[in-house]
Length: 620
Image 1 (cartoon, one colour):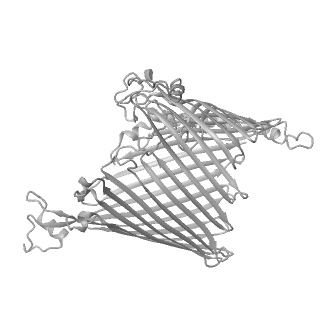
Image 2 (tube, rainbow, N blue to C red):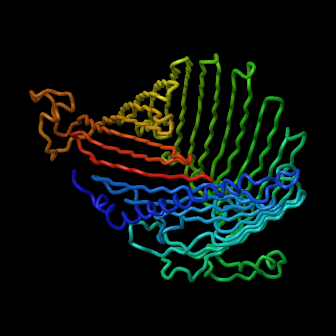
Image 3 (cartoon, one colour):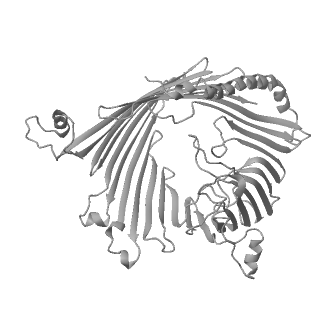
């Protein structure tokens, strides 16, 4: 096997990153072990009087992970060495609760957004204060899915609530040609406030305001990215009636977004609303106002559960308080679930319909519709069955009379999927057996205009997947699991086949203080397709005969004809998990995973990949 640079790097710079956490782990283990006795004494301190309040209590955990990675034959998909520390601790002092969470990784660098996190929180009665890395969720379209390095305070005495958050939501990243670089970004600061009246959850009304702005001078050479600014306003309404049997939720976010803070300023006149907003955000030629919102209704009628929702995101809607957003979308969804036959059967139904081009600004409109059912049967105490069906259609239609004669813009695909999964569990005094299977049949029909007119071939396919799994376990902790899968996929142009098998076993030693699990797997995948033979094709004639099924007497004219190509590849895998419970009760885990890929004679990438990790967790 040829050595790959990432293999040698384990002993150099990345190796230092790999072993440094190990040294820190040893020191941390010694320190935590020495303090275990005193912590135990503190945790068992008596309560104050007849209350449940303790003068002081502490608990938490520290987890240290060291990982190594090596590969040959392909480019590395992970760093050669990785160290990670996770820690959390919760304290109680005379009823005042607080805690600390920490995440540190040696894989963090200045070429992308930070992975490291530090979070402190403290609460007393109805006040909670957080500092460090916080992840607020105020509303679906204004502030959700972003991490803020700063602080947050939440007050909820009952009928009134107030939440404030502020800090940096994005750090500056300059352009770099190094391998770990992802994208240039400005430093971004975010401030938000949410005020509510009513109970959480229950009937309530709330108002959320979010402001975010990029720091223009945080990147020396920003390139094509532009500094942005955004302010959003979200009124939210929740209604709960009849002990929660009926609920209504509404969130509408109005967003004022400036794509470029350097664009020209516009005159807003004497309008009182724009004059009020301009005190926080200057209107410019690149400023746009859009909205997004959702309305959700839920009902509970006995054992029947129903839920309906509608959401709409205007074209061009942007909010800097979201991790990501897909604009120009509208979706209606209905879901219901009901138990039948004395809870021996559960029936679920889902219907959704959505699309884009809400303002008719595109040359075509996409419409998506999905209908699915799911049924779970408990035929006996040992045998259960799950069956499901899903029908999904995607339709693209041209907009405007001048495009009606453009059949290439009319595309329609219909997908249907049937799945059944039986499960049988046979308990016994010595051995417990479990058998489960799965069978899936999926078809995709291409009903596009060009296909119906016979001007091109269909892009549809038929896919069949089956699987069978058997497991056995013994009272002494020994277990065996065997599984196999088959795949067959056919299209107009190709045929894909594949099969795999896996064998795993586990056993507990030393009264199950030491647990060992080993699994091996094998998979083989192939594809068969037709290729047009060119005049300058240099393959031997015998090779063409074998692939096409012809003969060596020259009866078939290969020059300018067609021949069938088959390409196969095989993969071997090994997974080992070793866990040991130390005398102090803390686990020490070792994981090793290896993959070896071997292509067939038709070509492909041959590679070997191995990944190992050692993790220690201390709980106190």
